[in-house]
Image (cartoon, rainbow, N blue to C red):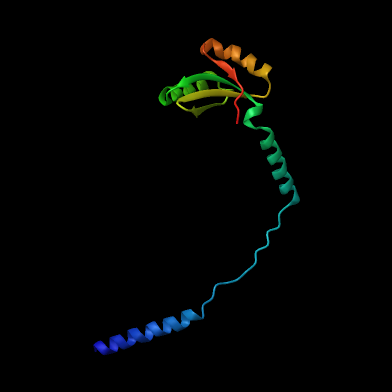
Length: 129
C-alpha cells in the first residue's frame, strides 16, 4: 500500500516536472505613445525648477536655536503669517527657521517690517547653496 502511494507521488511529481518545463514566459514588446506636448511640459518644468534655485531668493530668519523651539516657532509663525511658507534648516549646531521665498530684496524688506512686529530678532538673509 505504501509502495503504491510512493509510486503515485513519483508519477505526479514527474508529470509536474515535465509539464512545467514546457511553460514559458510571454515575450512582448510594449510601445508607449506619448504626446509631444508632454515632453514640452517636462522641459518647461525643468527650466522653472532651475530658475528657482535657493541662492536667487531672499528669506527672513526668525529663529536660531534648538530643534524643539524651532518647531514651535515655525508652527507659531505659520499661524501668524499664513501667506508665507516656512522651513527649518539645520546648520550646525543650530536649527534655523526661515520664512518666505522672495525674488527681490525690496519685497523681502516689506515683509520683514511686518514680521519684526512679532519677532523682534528677525532679519533678512540670502541663503547660499
